[in-house]
Figure (cartoon, rainbow over the protein chains, first blue to last red):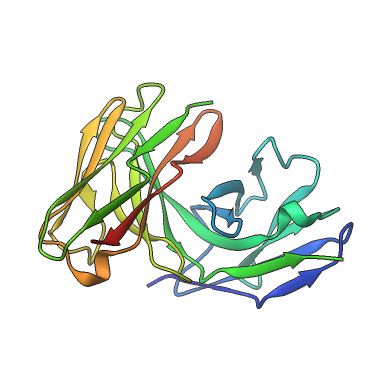
Length: 124
Length: 109
């Protein structure tokens, strides 16, 4: 069964670049989109973007220009880079696999499985 | 962008009771809705996809229903481990974008 393993907690200063990795085990990156989501303290979930094994990406427009998602097929992992961080980027960052069903009734998507989450703190 | 509204924000229930959580969307999304459960300090866990299909390993007391713009997650015979945060989720295929409801917190009465 596919499992996602994220790197450990991060503490950054404002204006630095956040780099996170999600390692996929028990399966391949091929055939799926892989996504990042974040959750500020005490708040809801915000979608960051997604990346496919081909390198194709889609981003949340609110972060476009600061975020870059990539894949490393040789290491079976995908990564997030967020530049020029501020305190507003303090959150737990999750990685997940995008799954879908194209059966009768239209396309359906969901995120499963998820990584365990990486707490990220931005503070001066 | 499609807006998702969950209600109530917080609901207090007791073990053994039944509870229904609501999620409404601003546009018709057919059955393209998922539900997740998040316990404190944990990652979200998929419960329901396609509005009504239980994910692998999810107990039968969790039921998803609805289509179009009105959706519900009903939990029967509530157990202690069910006290958590619940999110509904839409992943739009074009433009590709994910949206989550603001969440409903299920707490012990």
